[in-house]
Image (cartoon, rainbow over all chains, first blue to last red; front, side, top):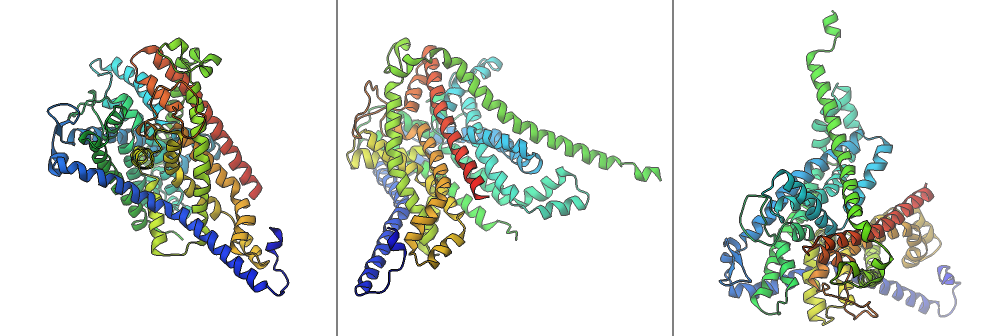
Length: 311
Length: 291
C-alpha cells in the first residue's frame, strides 16, 4: 500500500499503471457515490410504498370521506374511514407537547447561551443530551405509571389512558431538541450585537428579547417546526399512555388515539396483506409522512430564506 | 440633583424584569435536571427489587416471578451488531462522498435535502417501509436481518450527518500536504483524512447506535413483538428486543408486569448511559488531541 503513495520512477509500463490507478480512483468514487445516493433512493422508496398501497386503499374509500369523515372504525362493522378523529388526537398531543416543550426549551437555550457559566453549561448540556437519548418506550412507561397517577390525584375523573399525560411526556421529549437547536441559533448571533445593546444601556433581559432572540429568529422558528414534526410522529409514548379510542374531543383527560398509535394497533393484530384494514396502515402512514415532510421542508426553507447572515 | 443620580423608577423596574427573567430561565433549565432525576428514581425504585441475575438469565414468562430478559438482551445484541455492520460502512462512505468528492450540482443538492428530511421522518414510517420491502417484498420474514436493515435505514442519516461534521473538521492543510507528496485523492482520504476524523465519526456512530437500541416502533411494525423463548442463532431467526419486551410488559394491566418493565428499563438505560459515556469520553479525548 505505502509503495503506491510514492510516485514510482518512470519506467516502461508506468502508463498502464497510472491508467489502472485512475480507474481504481474512479471505481472507489463510484461506490461512495452509490452510498450517498442511497438516501434519495430511501426517500423515493418510502413515497412509492406509501403511495402504492394508499392508492389501492382509495379505490375502496373516497379520498374526501377519508380526509373529512368524523368516524374512524376501520376494524369494526359498520366500517367508517374518516381520519379526523386520529388527526384530532394527534393535534391534541402536539399542542400539549408544544405548551410544555417550547417555552421550557427556549428558556433553557437562553439560559445556556446568555447566562450560564461554563461550569453550569457543562452540567446542563449533558443532562439535555441524556433526556434526548432516553427511548420513547421509557417515556411511555413514565407517562402511564407516574404522570397519569399524578393527574388522577388532582383530577379523579381522569381516564387511565388520557391525552394529557402523553402530551406532557412528548413535551419533555421534544424539549432537549428545542433547547439544543435554539442554543445553536442564539450562539450564532455575534457578540458585537450584544455589546452594542449593552452600551446603549439595555438590561440583559432587553438584550435577550429585543436583540438576540430576534437575531436568531429563523433558527428558533425552525427548531419549533422540527420539534412539532417530531411530536406528530411520536409513537410509543402515545400508544402506551393515550389509549386506543379514536374520537374527536377537546377534553385532554379522555382516552384518544393518534395516527401513529393506530398504525401500531393494526400491526399488533394479524391483518392479512391486501385487505382494506391492511391498506389503512399505508393511508394513515402516507398522511403522517406528508405532514412531517411538509414540516421538515418548511424548517429547512425557513433556515435558508430568513437566516440573518453575520460576517 | 440627587434625584437625577438616584436610579429612576423606570430603571428599577427594568432591572427587576431583568433579574426575574434570569431567574425564570435558570429555574426552567434546572427543572430539566429535576425531571431527569424523577424519571430515573421512579424507574429504579419500581424495578430494582426485580433486578437480579435470574432476571437476566430467564426467558419471558406468564409468571412475573419467573420472567426475564434473556431473549430480549440477545435479540438486541444481534440487532445492534448487524445494524452496525450494515449502517456504519454505508453511512461513512456516503459522508466521504458528500464531503470530499461532491461538487455543487443539482443532484447533490437533492441528496442534501433528502438526508435532512430523512433525519426527521418518524421512525414508524421506517417501520412501514421495512414491513413492505424487507419483510414482504424481499421475503426476509420477521427476522433479525429484516429488523437490522430497517434500523440501518433509520440511523443512516444520523451517521452521515455526524460523519460529515467530523470530516469537515479535518484541516485542509493535511489534504494539501498529502497531495503535494503525490498521493491520489482516495489515498489521501484513506491514510490521512479518515484517521484524523475517526474519533468524531466513532462518537457520532455510537450515538446513532444508542438511538437504534431504544427504538421500538419500527420493530413492532416489522413484527418483532412475539413471545420468544430462545436466543437467535443466525440473522434469519425470529427475535425480540429489549424495548419490545418493555412495551409488552407495560401494556399489561398487572402491577407486577409494570415493575418488570421498570427493571427492563433500568437495564436498557444502563446500556445507553455506558454508550453515551463512551462517546463523551472519546469526544473529549479527540478535542484534547486537536488543541
